[in-house]
Image 1 (cartoon, rainbow, N blue to C red):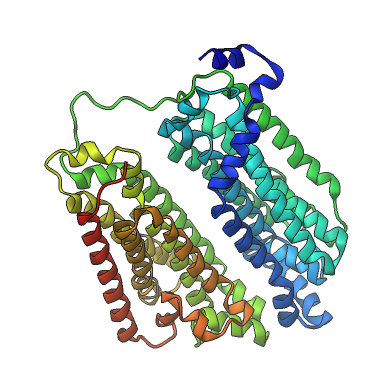
Image 2 (spheres, rainbow, N blue to C red):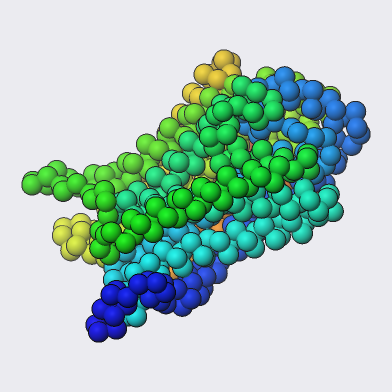
Length: 534
């Protein structure tokens, strides 16, 4: 206690006492998550030059791409404008925004996990009882995010150096700077709210707003000069213009944003007690209104479901609106057509594009189902499940409320996706909705595997995120890398009929449903028999 008081009364370096130890601890805890994020992002970027070399093999092909992109506002909204026709410039155009977004998500998850998550669980108070400075945990979290972004930047710069060292450096620094901007955004959100889930939601909402601003700005102009683009950190990334006359000064905008947001976060951290926040949660009603375990599950998950619902519907509208433009862009490019056919359907370019984009939404839905299935795991490890199970509530009834939301939520999200595609594209609703719903069995298989891991080996439950990530990687990047079909078939999505346009095959669908049911039943059986974690 004396040491703690001495730390708190001291200024300067005492405020950061223990930062090194906390940083090593944070990196040790994230020794799996950080490498996976970095590997996925780096693989997505570094695989692109070879893919683009096959897609646009001649100068004429690349010049034609630039002409079409300048006239195609819907595709500019998705991936941004093209600033040059070299392989490096095309790589920065094709994956720059998404690499920045992935770095941002990685960074905000790291910061929230090692700040507000620790306070919410009570571990931060235990750590603070030692000789630890007041701002040490925040500093360690930001440094952990910085280390992750720096490693990613080194890999990107080294992998793209063959396309030009200056462009590789500019691109890598732009991606890392974007990650740091949202790391400091998450640091502010962690001071404002008492809930780690809400802190992640706030930071993710800021990232979503940045994407929308950039998309709106890029749709309006073909050179990234719109004021809306300049309001977005993702717009700063594309305006670095890697491999197209690098604008190094744009990186100063990210640096200034990082410095200002970090100063705000440090100021807020010094003005509150551990575990408290500036936006305290509202007290509940005097009389309870939740009459069942299912109602409690819905109360815990409704915010996430509503957020995912809005995102899936808007994504459907955007993808639907760019369908005709994508068909014009692909044109007679046989290689691009082949990639779309491997991802989606095989009859008609428009149907092929719709099938591939609906497949992408199905892959993203796998992330939702894992998050929803593992919510009981969070309740269990935090100790909040024990009071509920101490009442007249069985384990299966308690878990079934969350699983109902998870599995029914997938159906709901894919229906919203279909409605969004219909609204954006203007085609018939029936075939599009059928194509969306046929994704459900594959998503349920991923959810069933998550239930299986949670029920039988709760300490390995986090591996369900690895399953979802592997499936996403195979479905998103695999076709462009000419991955053998036998490898693609390891994903449940590889066995789905390619709708719209393809032939409906019920056999694989029924097999996937059976696999999902068996995995879920086995997981619930394991949950019923094992000890609860605390």
